[in-house]
Length: 386
Image (cartoon, rainbow, N blue to C red; front, side):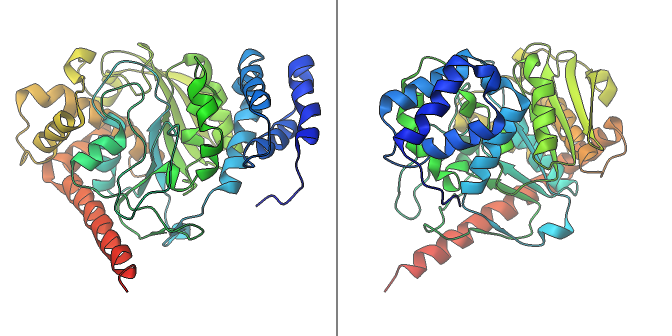
């Protein structure tokens, strides 16, 4: 944790540099400024507002080095999870930045669970980072809620009876070696609550709305990361590389969705061996037919949970109306399995993902996570009984 002395006076030259000469505002300047911002009750509200607006107008927040710097500050300040056997597994995450406005089924969550059932170790972080958090009683559900759809990842999992028990302040939440784990960013990135009211008051999305995929406190070695704007693709791929991710696919559907599209082509930026290469993928590359996005639309958390159960508990006989959803989930899970090194190509990844879903292995991965959450919640509650 940073121990350097900060004040309104030490922040003023950083703000002046950002506003007057943004070309000279470096990644180190951003780190210094953010450490000021995340110090409670330090800055005047006008300074915070001016800084967030200047970051946006000067487009400093779009620079790869800026995203990496901001992510590094947040990871440094985050509560660290205690992850069992982290050094033994090639952990992966699949997540989108949100903001595409298409209101689709929770494909990244479903794909992560399908990949876990196929042998990947998935530690998924909620995204985008929620605007505000608060201290809550033990057992209270809170976390990433939908920002551009009717149902966010946490909404869906909560409707599937999963529990998210926050760790005690100053302690690390233990994460056992199970196939699928879901992390609520607010439980770890509590410094973001300092600037929450100012972000909420602004009429535009700030850098912090898209930082979620870069600040998974579990520090996965591989990622499939969706962005809703093509212009962000290369930037995010570079930022992942600078953040220590070894292999990744950054994806953006031609319809500006933050997933691999089942309806047509998808721009992809592959990170491998420290190099980023751009390409285009289509459903045919996964051995699948194309489906209109209307056929994979989402609904409320309860409606999406019902759809999830119908798909993952189908007993190998998927209802005809869910074939597009099966393909949509399978192709995104396939990409994660390729990144994880479990599938040699996208067609094999699709076969493994479908087998995971149809055999019930994916559902077992979810059940393991659900049981683990309930076990941990019971343990925490018992510790409060005198």
